[in-house]
Length: 110
Image 1 (cartoon, rainbow, N blue to C red):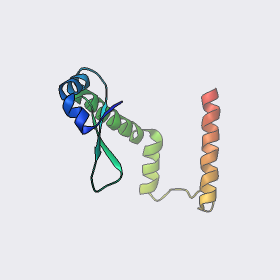
Image 2 (image 1 turned 135 degrees about the vertical axis):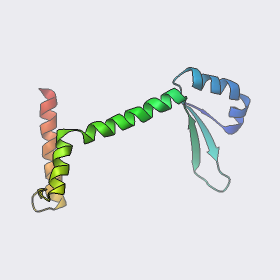
Image 3 (image 1 turned 45 degrees about the horizontal axis):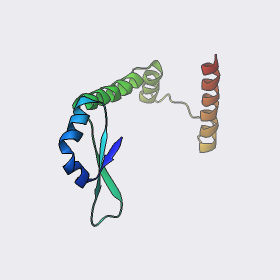
Image 4 (image 1 turned 90 degrees about the vertical axis):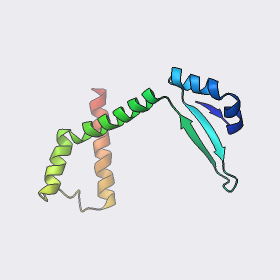
């Protein structure tokens, strides 16, 4: 991603906009507020790329909620049938997560 200062952006505005529109390039414009020592910035992307990012974000969210596991978890929560992991401590939760990660790694290797 190319980065421009406001001054540089003004000098090359037409070319920068042309590059963003004609490619999937993202352009960052740094903005330094006088009363703030942290650097802030704005990113320009073309509209087609933005729409694709939004579509992918919604698809990912929808895909997760439509999985059988998520539907089952929702059903359990509604019916108050959710299981407690171990005694409900963070240590038990961590070991359960580690077990799931280990099983996932095994399944990926198969």
